[in-house]
Structures are given as C-alpha cells and as structure tokens.
Amino acid sequence: MSAYWVRKRRAATTTTAPALLTVGGISSGAAALPFSLGGLFVVFLKIGAILFGGGYVLVALIRSNLVARLGWISERQLLDAVAMGQVTPGPISTAATFIGFLLAGVPGAAVATVAMFLPAFLFVAASGPLVPRLRKSPASGAVLDGVNVAALGLITVVTWQLFRTAVVDWTTLALAALSLGLLMRFRLNSTWLVLAGAAVGVSRVWLGW
View 1: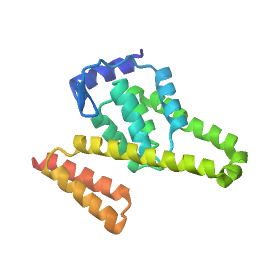
View 2: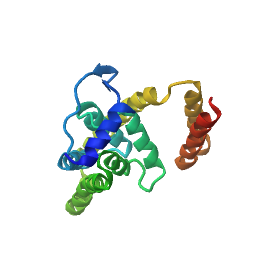
View 3: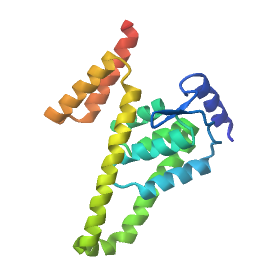
View 4: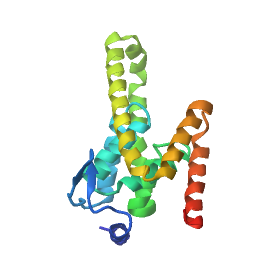
C-alpha cells in the first residue's frame, strides 16, 4: 500500500468518508477492503467490459462496486465524480479518471482510465465483422431490447439513490427542480447547469446561507 494511499485514507476517515455505507437504503458497517492499483484496474476493466446502455449505467456499476462492495469511496465522492464528468469530454465515463485520482493520484487516474476504455477498443475491433449480421437477426434485436430495459431500471434506481444523497435542504431541492425544468424545456448543455450549481454552492459558503 503506497504512502499516498495511506494519507488519502486517513484524510477520508476524518473528513468526508462516512462511518457506514448505505446499500439500497440499508446501513452496512462492513469495513473497506484494502486498496491497490491492481485491484482498481480489475474493477474498472470489469465495469468497462459489461457497461451497456449509456454512460449513466456506469454510475450504478461504480456505486455497487466501489461504494457498496469495496468501500473505497463514499456516496458524496461518487456525486463529485459525476459532476466532474459533466464538465469534461466524454461525460460520465471520464468520472473513472476522477475516481482514480481521488484514490491514488495521477497513477490511479491513469490506471482507471486505461482499464475503463480498454474493453471498448477490444470489443469494437472484435465485433466489427459481426455487426451487419447482428442487425439482421431478430433474436439479437430482442436481446438488445431486453438489455436496454434492464439498463433503464439501473439508471432509475441509482438516480433515486444519488438524489437522496445530494438533495439535503430546500436550496438543493430548488436547484434540482430548476435544473430539471431547464433541461426539459430548453435542453441546456449540462456544463452550464453544473457551473451554476457550483456558483450557488460557493455563494452559500461566502454569504453564510
């Protein structure tokens, strides 16, 4: 275990990391498992290999692995990673880079990024000749329809779980409602909403709201 990781874990236990992990709304007192760069690589390699249905399914997979099972990050840190992913190219997927940096600095960011995107490159190269056949197959279409519905269920559940973590008072509730309304009515770029939310958060600290 690197000295950097030891410092990060000590800081996390005294600041933002919760004493208990919440899994599906039920508190779990399971201790965090030991961290390693190899373990980080395996986790994101697995997530990258099974990811289907859009970037937001990644949030559910990260939560189930890194928050609930391993205890390497907290719900709040996962929310921070999602927010950072919204202001970078390749939204959500680049949250893996942010999480890797949180856990082990630049080496962790590099390992998480490579592991996250490596399966996609391999699968695209391997499946290229099969795509025309899959498009013509009714069976493959039915399979993809079923996977899409399952992915939608994952997105819905994790959205509700993160909503309960992020919305903690009337201000955050108003921001969530306003952001939803603006997205549905004007389809604003999410970057502007993230920046506006950050500005409100800073203003609350400075003005003592």
